[in-house]
Length: 452
Ligand code: SF4
Ligand code: SF4
Figure: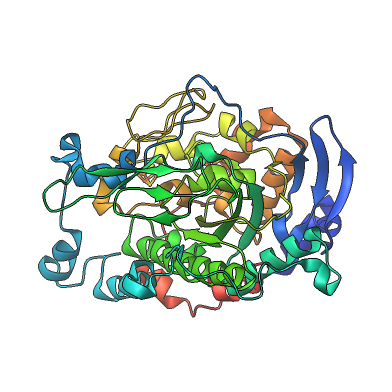
């Protein structure tokens, strides 16, 4: 059957040119270059932009307080005090005796194992800044020592990121507006306490009263981590939460390793998961993908099926370019995630400059989701807007390849039809946990070559 599909695609001219391993510039546009790079972008052609991917309104766009993220507000904001707090674990493992469909004891075990390294703390915390570490005895590494230039060195740093476990890596100049302006630091007596994050000087460190990020730390390496496709397709079941946790644990491991690699070369490094700043715009600046209607980074290779970490550094890396590959145009026609969101957290309308929640970061022209209603659903265990997105489907689908080619050609009127065809083919349906466990794992993210 697989061979039949390949033959079918070949007849349509859909594969041969796209599967070359090399990164090739194959055209010029007003905004940049058209690039083919199957290892990075799957079978998409992308437009590598000579300008920022964002439209921003400088009157509105300000650095977001970290204390205003929904995660922080859950700890101090009275407006969040009455949020639903159903004990999903107890409901399924005790009341349901571990037998409820998609929430069995086996599913929860996979979930629990997945999250182990995401939660590491103490001196083993991979997200430590190590700001007080002494300067490296051999000073800052110069790539010229081994006949490299900074372009080569930047590729080497991204190679190291992939070596440590990232699925995608890109470098960008750090936009200080993406760094949170404060940090929620509650004490026993003051659960609303916040401290400022000061990024306009040269001090580096974390004290009880403030965090300091030097202006010279003006680069960021954005890291994306593929989430297991079949586990994610179980959303909103427990296996999707396991896919999420697996991503968070790999984020922590890889960001921590990459930060230590950079420090060993004599440069400073701040590894971060969701903390310290907004991961999605940093990843977009670093050329990892576009923003979707679902409020998520949509990458060419994995769609929105990724988790994101980053490492901020003063290593003078050469920045990658932002990319465009038709996500905005496709999302304008496709409302799948908005229609299928169980909480109505995703807008069906046009893009706007501001969102409905105090936890939105306003000032860029985009679709704003409601992070509060999203968080409150199902014990914060939902990935439906990833499960249903046509970009999520791996490259083994002939139908999705056709959709992608339609996007590349920007034949907008067909997008509605193609989405309908994609759904009619069954894509986006929940995979039950029992079907997941019947698989032998050969198509998991650790064996992704089999998915092509
Ligand atoms: S994760 Fe679920 S609840 Fe949240 S926006 Fe996506 S579909 Fe909606
Ligand atoms: S489901 Fe459709 S509208 Fe939503 S992010 Fe994916 S392509 Fe865009």
